[in-house]
Image (cartoon, rainbow, N blue to C red; front, side, top):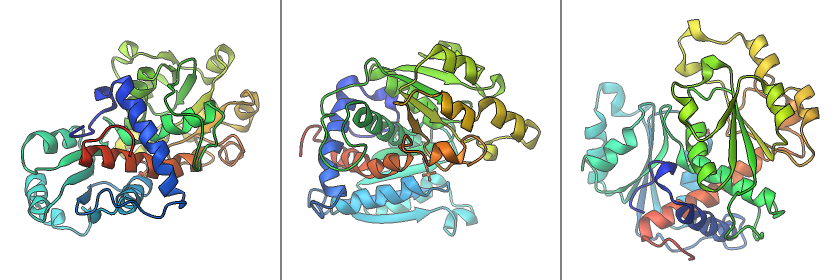
Amino acid sequence: MKHLLSTADLSREDAIGLLDVAEEMTQVSTHSVKKLPVLRGHTVVNLFFEDSTRTRISFEAAAKRLSADVINFSAKGSSVSKGESLQDTAQTLGAMGADAVVVRHNGSGTPYRLATTGWIDAGVVNAGDGTHEHPTQALLDSFTLRRTLTGSPASGPGGHARGTDLAGTTVAVVGDILHSRVARSNVHLLTTLGARVVLIAPPTLLPWGVETWPAEVFYDFDEALDAHDFDAVMMLRVQFERMHQSFFPNTREYSRLWGLTAGRYARLPEHTAIMHPGPMNRGFEICAQAADSPRAVILNQVENGVAVRMAVLYSLLTGKEGAL
Ligand code: CP
């Protein structure tokens, strides 16, 4: 794997291979082994043009736990504010010696440009590009789901999940699908791993062409709950920052019709895992009762993100796709 730009580029075997390497990485990320020397001498550049808490920090932790050097670049406070272009920024960081570039940008396709223009000679990892994709989020979501469904601990070392896919699983993805790179990456990866995907959203927050996606679509959350016993319900944040104000949904109506309210939470089967990529709008798309419940694996998703990103950096920088 030279770059990780989209989950659509991953075969079932690629995806299971990465999740299995991530299983091994949990030994490091849960501190039974402090650090691995496997990326010593490599430099990872975190190139963030958009805000982030989980993705940026977990990529930094992942790189450091594999003994790589890390350079953190944030557009805020950089020469981007003086008008420096993406090309010049990339070439400047490349001149300092980058082996991998982890890029988040509000422009869909920016990681592809970095991977294909030759501006920088480094592996490129898409850490979220506009409304397009967020492949490592989808990988950590599948990792968390796989553990939950195989009865392995939701986080921590060990587990019986290795080698398995998500066949027979039904996952609801609920909310602002239109602006969600998490939804796009998850639809590709979940279906590659054999899961059935059900999208639930108001018609105004679904993209053109959604009927061609490999997913069933509901406009009514309650109808979807009548029709399916979901193994997981993945709530999405409404991305106000990507909408013109005149298109903002009415918050009370949105919450009543498409939120995971206490009433809908009570309707979910006992085994349903509650997921959210974060950051959450509590009380809007998800009630606190659901977010803080024992069925929520939201913090497990965050924890597992470190191991998954270790697996991605390891595979990208060593070219090895199997075990350590
Ligand atoms: N899920 C996610 O991408 O969160 P951050 O924006 O905090 O990185």
